[in-house]
Amino acid sequence: GLGLMVAVTPFGGNKEKVLKLIKTLFNNGLICFGCGKEPFRLRFLVPAIIEDKDIEVAAKLIEASILELAD
Image 1 (cartoon, rainbow, N blue to C red):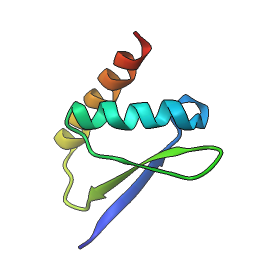
Image 2 (tube, rainbow, N blue to C red):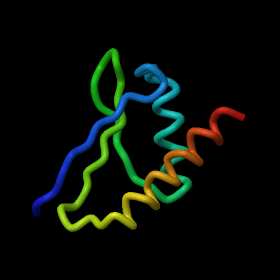
Image 3 (tube, one colour):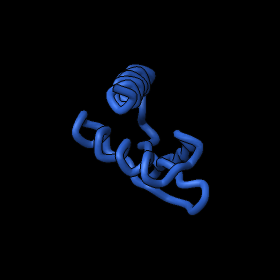
Image 4 (cartoon, one colour):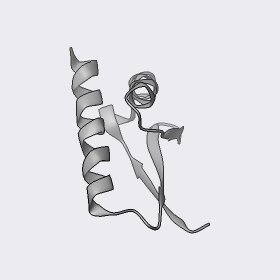
């Protein structure tokens, strides 16, 4: 299959915080993986057929999950 790989570094790459975010994202319906070492990153494997509306949904889930951890 064809696709894209996207990595981001939330929380300054703090592994403990990023792992909590991965679990929160999964619970909210978005699958991602951890990667790297100092900084620790989130990795998304995106299908090549992604549409703008899919990106908008993912962005909302990411934002909500980060805010959930900030509480």
